[in-house]
Amino acid sequence: MKKFAFFTLIFSFIFFFLSCREKAGTDALMAPKNSAEKKIIVGFSQIGAESAWRTCNTKSVRDAAQKAGIQLVYENAEQKQENQIKAIRSFIVYQVDVIVFVPIVVDGWDTVLREAKDAGIPVLIIDRKIHTEDESLYAGFIGTNSEEEGRKCARFLQRKYHTLDGFSSKKYRIFEIRGTEGSSPAMGRTSGFREIIRGDPCFEIIGSESGDFLRSLGKEVMAHALDKYKHIDVIFSHNDGMTLGVLDELALRHIDAGRDICIVTIDAEQAALDALKAGKVNCVVECNPFIGPMVMDLAKKLAAGESIPRLVHVNETEFDEGNDLTAVPPRGY
Image (tube, rainbow, N blue to C red; front, side, top):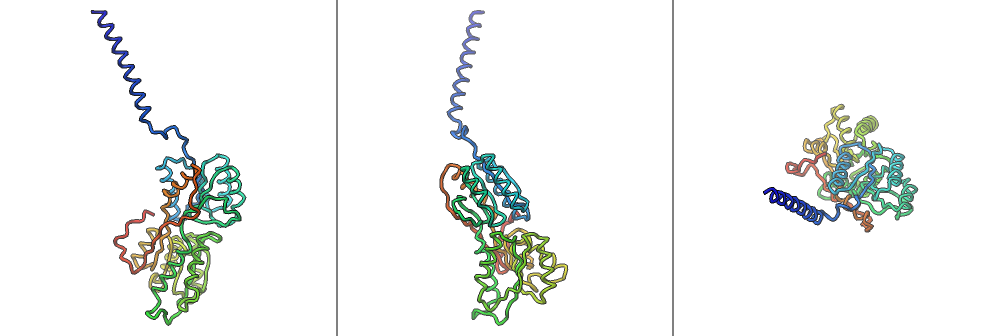
């Protein structure tokens, strides 16, 4: 009996050992092939957090990286180009697979991008464009079409003020609040707007000042403009942050925004759409911040040594006082 019990114990142990080996082999076969693959590392330099739009744009990129299983090394430049250049150089030292950055201004990138190219690290530019003497220094761009955003704002004004025969008998005076000097959105929105307005006898641009895409400066510039000009019919603001500052100043002076002064703005933050619904803003042109998934798709291709399109403009829409806004879902920013 004791012998039988002993052999039973031995056979049970052997059976358990073989079962464990068989299960371990099955699990190894079922494990995903990419489990041992090197994780892609992306260095991401954002210009800052100057608005709800920018915060949303950053979140979109970070969330997309996490979902794609990509390690993101993030740096906030705090609105300084020198900080971005330092960040890009740190990415090169860290030997990331891909560099992604939002250039605060268009010029001054050739040297550091050449360093990235010499290190064999592809660069993807997003949201804002650059000027460079050597287009091979970056792989591609994905983001907004700033010129078209400016055109959309101008076309709205034409729809609003032109009479049936194509022109109004009144000349409408426009004051422009531009974004950051030297940035591609400010330059593109200005040129696109003027492309449509130029030669139209209905409109006159009486002044243009930079508000640096900041709410506080938007308020300050609006105050200066109201003190300087006797009459303003239209405010063309390059982003919603500055527009909210405009509304702050108009409220202080008891000026009926949206009626006494027509306001056209770009971004489509929730606060701007709420102001549009309340009749305080007349037109909101979207600048799409939700580009993270597309950015990560392109980063994967670059990390794999594949080519990508040189230029990708994201889809964007517009909202104006003539639209039914009840069905517009919350923006999330």
